[in-house]
Length: 400
Image (cartoon, rainbow, N blue to C red):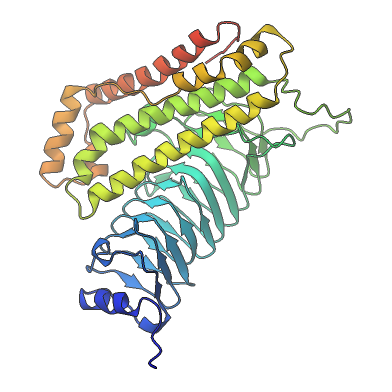
């Protein structure tokens, strides 16, 4: 009996359509992979790679496994994505995104254009806006990061950085925002820099242009833009542990609401503006669908974690009692909301997409008035959702 590697027929079909596979017998495609969702234009699949899942999309110019074997499982890859080695499951990588070897990228992750990381980076429920660059040996889960205008002027995270997203009480209501959606989508904000060998204790939010010194652990918000932060070393503390005390509960709740509200703004941006460009790309509709699924997954994760925290609360004051009683109403208030994009912006971006203008160039070509209109539109979505939650919890002092 002839021994044939699993998926060899599909590998041969890919080679026939133009995919470069130097050692076909070492590449493993499972039975669910649809070769019609893999481009034949400039795709290179190096030895040892594994491709899985019926939803997987691989666009023109992608490279897999140039450094070490790469596994992708139900991932969506835009044009020119370079995944040098590691594992990715349920992630979306837009045009020009990249990860070096040792990547471990899990569900709910969205890397926008030209975002990426060096070797041995772990991501989950992570949204990186265009150009954001991560160093090596990083764990960066449960967050959104924006900032920067180009590959030469980008937000950056230094090597050996950690976003601490798990508390001693077992909570993950800890999502952080470095920058924000209403301003970040315009790609004209100063970059954010998080120095290496440091970390952030979520949930935290920072303004654009924030610089956090190497070796620092960021524990509080940086509200203003353009701030240098050099936190002092904490004094040694000895005190009894009080499990599930949640002394800063209102801050935790406010950060989670703000995060979900920004997700609503980002989803509106994708549905009304980004779709104009995706619709003109090979596999663009599938990649857009994958991005929207991941945004919904991130929302669901944040709601799940908020419910888990509330289940641990005790009704020790009026605010906590109200939150426990009305958590279902809070969740309803956090459902995705939308609002019409400024008509002039839709016309301008639609015309640019029709003319084949690259998405990044189109965004950076918006006029000052159009930029103001975009920020007002998306900020209105964020503020409306925050107000809805505040009205649901009048006994809780939410300071947005």
